[in-house]
Length: 411
Ligand SMILES: Cc1cc2nc3c(=O)[nH]c(=O)nc-3n(C[C@H](O)[C@H](O)[C@H](O)COP(=O)(O)OP(=O)(O)OC[C@H]3O[C@@H](n4cnc5c(N)ncnc54)[C@H](O)[C@@H]3O)c2cc1C
Image (spheres, rainbow, N blue to C red):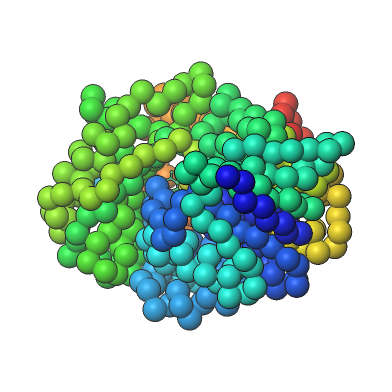
């Protein structure tokens, strides 16, 4: 049996990138169909953390009040190498608060926001193939059980996440010689579930006691639970040879007493994470990849919700302007993230070198000033409008790094 649909813009994937894109397209008055393989609400492996960059984007979508009804964080409590430092969110041109919302709830709400804005939605349909004419995608073929659903479209947005199966069909290639993430998350009850600080442990140790190139996190959800996870950095040359679930268990054991954690880690899952625009083939004449599919993840903290939402807004603007996506989309991503992703992935790559973190970590953690800078840079909490010295240094480093890249982000 084959069912048929048609739409002006077809969005495949209803995570933050896809739902953000669909919401903005609908607000531009464009006919959009938002599809997903899963049936919502659905879970997604994530730390659930929302830094000020993500808050800013959710506020733009009109979700500030909804978010404030959840846990509100004042900043990051950084632990490690015998120190604990409280680092308030820097504010400036970005909001001065953060939050954390379980993705089962956040993504459902974002999808509903797109539908309320006028997007049509279809879930439980898996995109498996495309039909093309002269390089342009004309139809996407979906499977729903035994049924085939074909959707004719004028433009296509691929927001199908890290593995990006439809992106692969279109020729997307992920470069693992550039730094990528290996991360896992779980949920655990905690007596500190209402803590107004998110916590990161920068001294994450493996089973031999060695310092790993990554960090552990405890993000309060305000519902009696915390999101507990670990993330490490790797490259094809220096793969992360570790068992993520075992690492989460030992991290939980270490933090049980100080954070009042329960015994059981609920719903542990893990995933690989392309970062820093380390993919090629992100656009064609009438299609574009957004979010994780385009490796729009910050290499220094593993954040991607904000970049997915921002990307959705930016690609919707290009479509509303009738831009040629093949040239305009890579140029837009390079303009917004090229330099910051370039320097971030260069630094992240350095951290994968054995003993670098063990050597630099203790010195950094002894200085509030260094850690305040690190929070700002690692979180990419710098906007084009920021004129202070830390922002200028970050942009300068980004420009120089980008100019020296053998394969710059998104190329
Ligand atoms: C362990 C871990 C912790 C993280 N922690 C954080 C954090 O704290 N904060 C943060 O900002 N980011 C975090 N990230 C990154 C963040 O989860 C992603 O960057 C974000 O989910 C990207 O959103 P997206 O919409 O691009 O992709 P997704 O959220 O992955 O959405 C993709 C959607 O596409 C659908 N799909 C896939 N294939 C198909 C198909 N063939 N047909 C139809 N639909 C399909 C999927 O069902 C899914 O709903 C973390 C990632 C990991 C792995």
